[in-house]
Length: 91
Image 1 (cartoon, rainbow, N blue to C red):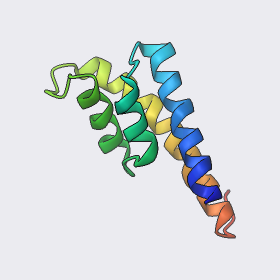
Image 2: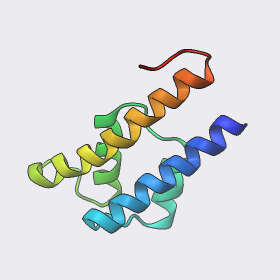
Image 3: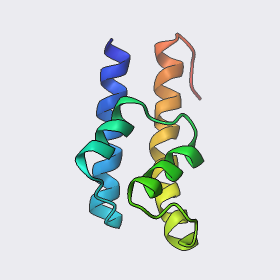
Image 4: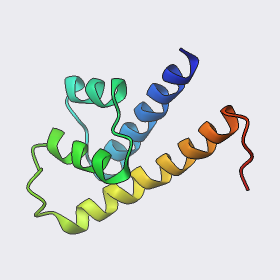
């Protein structure tokens, strides 16, 4: 249960960052959906954010690149955390 709680908190921070930095402030139900069941890939998570904002048609390439960059930063940290939790070593 601890891993899920941590991930949900991490996703909350990611979504807060997207709201503050880029103006992607998702409706509460969409935010909750992503927190409870976050996509496991950077592109899938980015797509989920755009779909939640009603912008899923891929016309916003520059903005998508910015959102993807923030998502990627967070997800890289998650991978390191999962490796440590599994007893692996990160370099």
